[in-house]
Amino acid sequence: MMPNTLPQKKRSFTPVIISIVFIILIIVGIFLYFSKTKQTAINDTTDETPANASLQTNKDVEIITPEQIANIFTRSLTPPPSIPLLLPQTDNQTTQSLRSDMTISEGPLILMPEHSSTLTFHVEKGDSLSTLFNKAGLSNAVMYSALESAPKEQQNKFTHLNLDQLFEFTLNDAGDLLAVSTKPDLLNTYTLAKQDNGYMFSHNAIKPTYKKVYAYGSINSSLFAAADKAGIPHAMIMEIANAFGYDIDFALDLRQGDVFEVIFEQKLVNGKIVGTGNLLAARFTNRGKEFTVVRFTNSNKVASYYRADGTSMQRAFIRTPVDFTRISSKFSLGRYHPVLNRIRAHKGVDYAAPTGTAIRAAGNGKIVSIGWKGGYGNAIVIQHGKTYSTLYGHMSRFAPGLKAGSYVKQSQTIGYVGMTGLATGPHLHYEFRVNGKHVDPLSVKLPMADPLSAKEKTRFLEISQPLLSELNENKALSLAKIQADKDSTADTTDENTEADSAE
Image (cartoon, rainbow, N blue to C red; front, side):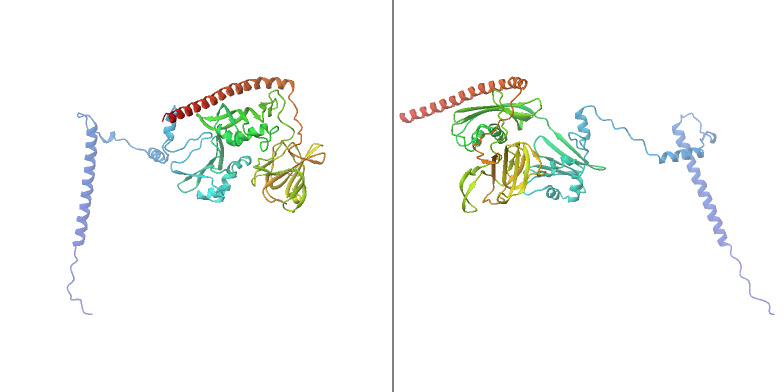
């Protein structure tokens, strides 16, 4: 075998040298870094100590134990303590501090987020609660959820709507319902506000103050026109008609020149008239005959109207069971029937009135028949004791909850005017029977209600006499003012006549 005669390559140490140098440089850099850090710490310590203080030694450095490190870590995980909210002491300060992020209302405190909006709607013809929710961008499901949170006896505050009734919807930024409130009148606000478990119902009522008001009027064309001129609200006009309704037929008996005087209550809030209260006393002169009524509440808390001598104005029956525009047909045994086109006895009185007008029970009694009754259409028959009964025909619908056997009170709404059965227009056909025999409701003598007891009559006179004195005093002032106005007008007319003559 031939020996290897090629020269061997010399091994190079260059990479080893480079590695050693690199390691040395790293060590030097680390040494310089820690030296600089130590110097900085010494300088910081020197700045915080007196000039003559010596540098701290290693034995002065505080050693942190593992337990201390654990405590520091635990404290870092604990949330900072909350700062107690101290409410200001005055009402103005409280309102100012809360106004930025919540709303305060009367009654239960309802907090509204800062970022909320309120939509306001007034009830228009054809509106329902559902359409109002839809206008606010809310579904029927939301409506039912809110409504079901209210007590059943209060739900009608939201569902029974009046034209121009105010509704307010408070929504958050996402369009969710926070609260809905309604004001059916100026004194009451009903609210459903969002809570964690549904909606909370609240009722805020403003208590008005009452002021006695006197008014005097003279009839030229109608009671309504005269009362309007005297500044008497329509609701009070109806109360006057009800008070005198047993003695005066306001559809047939009124004459030009009849006069009336009333003392009634006005409801005020902050000096603003927001409604009417009770009719306290009134005097009506019809065809030269004077009638007087005074309101009196007996020991059973039942209010009625009485004459000046304490006898009851109320009879066992009211004369007219509906607010009507005119009598379209009177009681007659030989009347020509407009539908049947033949002579047929008309054993009642027809009161023309708009469809939907409320029909009232003429007296206390028991319903013996309710439903469809041939030519009468929808009709109700009420038995009043053993002697009297009344019939109400052509109704559009019955009041809810009534059935045969139900007991009703005088003036209770039992149904609504319509034109069902043999009728050519909307009206109430009303019949009055005595021992089963038809009599004319317009001329029958109505039985009286029970009189006051001796004790109640004494208390009545204590209340009535001051009111009657007020009527007399105010009447004298009103007549004097009317005469002064007439004299002033006459003087002005005479002056104008003299001036014309001089020219």
